[in-house]
Length: 404
Image (tube, rainbow, N blue to C red; front, side, top):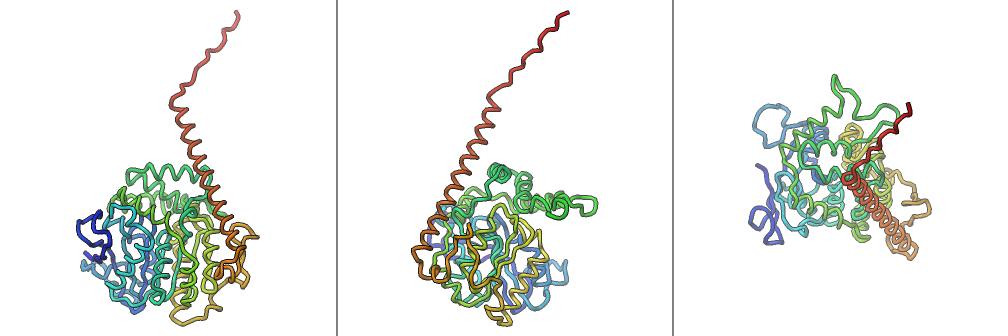
């Protein structure tokens, strides 16, 4: 089986009992253009199946000798690599939270590029994988040909979902899920939009005799059953990676000044990674970034597969043909604000860190803290209501007797 051994600075506390982390990976196609796809939270390498087929022209991994599919060579232009992050799938599962940060996981991805002999690659990341991709781009900007960030946030408080009754219910169900069936049901509600604006609900659309929800549910259960539920160590570790993630001004400047093209691709109805966080990051990455908003949810790469694949191919082709940054970005010189219209920092603010930008940054963090506290209050209120329902028995009052 294809594994990359990554040297581990923590000498103990991880699965396997040696001084290495094993990263499981698969490659597809045999072209000269290299594409590394980084999976999100609790996902496996298989999450990118729809993208690897579009990019390489094949579903068959390069190490598959089964002979079931004759398209193993693909289109001859692209070689793509997908892998399981540490803490998930067939990769090692360190037991210490400190062994999970987006910087450490970015170094896993860099080690994988070294293992494959890739000097440069187009980097694609989804959700937590997009955070890892940002770190990778800041660590080795000279090895990045282009950067695609799908459903990305800035980490920390920005990882908290949209606060309403529906998403709080999803969060509770996610934490309680103990079986592939329970996890599949909550994942469907998390990954896809609740309803189409112009048609019927996405998951209720019929594909033949079955709804899309029924088909996807069976696929999710099968995939989760084959890889196994994520362990507590992996779950807590990857949560830690998302929570501690932060891109500093220096790191963002390294990415901006490297000169490669960037696409920030996001679902407008993502309840996990909210759209305004992605827009803000795209603004900070000017003049290199293009913002692409699609009608989809958190797993926009599956819900809007064709549009996402077209966007990725456009980014790769534009990078290979050396298109200018001016012709790539769809932002004006004066970009829009962040959480509110008056919250914007010009290019000088991002580089120099003026007092105005610092104040707006503090206000933004205060706003997110308020959202977090409100979320805790709503969760406590919901638990309280359920506890009352369990312990207080209804009293039946008999009907009054009628006079005869």
